[in-house]
Amino acid sequence: MYTSMIFIMIIIMIIMLVVTISLLKRKNWECFYIENEILYLPSLFVKEIPLSNIRNIEFETFRSRGSYSGIIRVYQKDAKVVKRYFQTSKLAFFVNEQMVLEEIEKITPILKKYYIPYTINKRKY
Image (cartoon, rainbow, N blue to C red; front, top):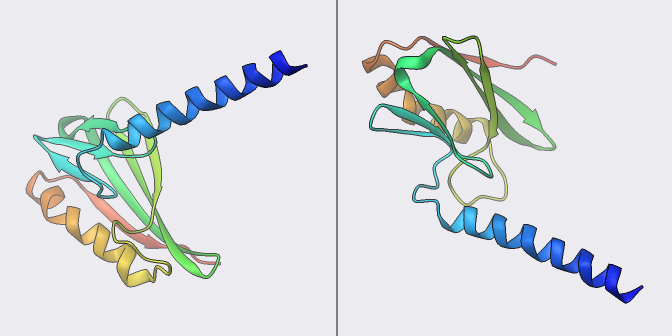
């Protein structure tokens, strides 16, 4: 009985260690960012997408539990779609729509520079 509990606790500790290392290893805490012509989409593990492989990007804002959230959908040239949810890179208890739009505004000048088409939609209920 105690051996199974110890085994489960060891598994939980390993998972917590992997998550902690993954979070501490990050060098940028933005919702998404571009460096060296690569789009980085952080979640538990960071997804890297070369800008040359992006067909278009969709941003969507929506109300969620009294706050606002956003979705970034990256459509790649090889027909894959990568989707991530985001709010804001600032420390905030309440996120309004303007804060989500400010996160999108951070990346749009670079998208324009590389001629990557993008749309910003507001979810209708």
